[in-house]
Image (cartoon, rainbow, N blue to C red; front, side):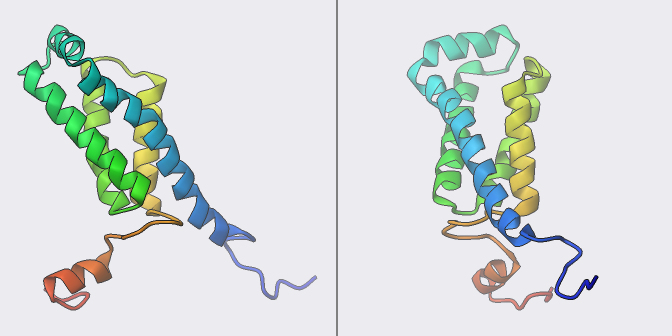
Length: 145
């Protein structure tokens, strides 16, 4: 039996590396968008709920969280700086779980967001924020300080 041509990662790992982040992006979008939309559509109810669970400046915080979630969702849908968008959702989910409750949807969004941060954007990303992109934007070579 020959191991020639096999890799330590196994067959199909390239496809998994490309498609798992796409699935994670879709899952996070499907779960975060309705919550963000409700913060806008039912502003008074959401502000009252935030105040009830002890969120300071509930009226402002609802709008701030809704804006963060909507911008993150838009970035994840388009695939623009998906890692950054997912990273921004992590403290939102941790705070939600700390102030309210650890519910399955928040855990799923947290795990999905961390997965995107670790794995990247996957296929169909329009713009990736990686070291080469940062180097081009700042005018520095990769590894320069």
